[in-house]
Amino acid sequence: MSADTDDTEDTDGTDDIDDIDDIDGTDSTDDAGNSADNDNAATDFTLRGEHITLDALLKASGLASSGGAAKQMIQSGLVQVNGQAELRRGRKLRTGDRVVFADVAVRITAPDAARP
View 1: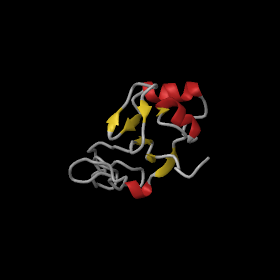
View 2: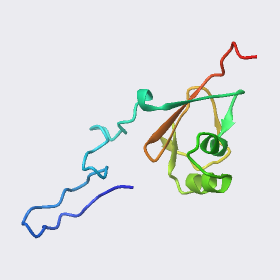
View 3: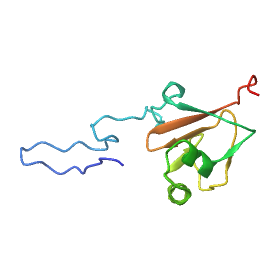
């Protein structure tokens, strides 16, 4: 999903923008190459138990329309867990883990202790 362009000249004689990350021409990474996503921008997902598998989270959070879609997203290397590409659909996610897919971040939170 990047809008990278080459260094060829446009018809008006100017160079194309090189190495942009977002379609709007802005760079969403800092100088160290880290994504501009932060925990404030993440959607919280509250666990019901001790963990949830990565494919189940993608379905439950609405990022994947089906288990097959979740599997394909994961196997394609498009999903990151805690900043690293994750290829295991059965990866157990626990409180504090952070999942990112297509600039959407989901933060795993603990179940509410007051819940029956």
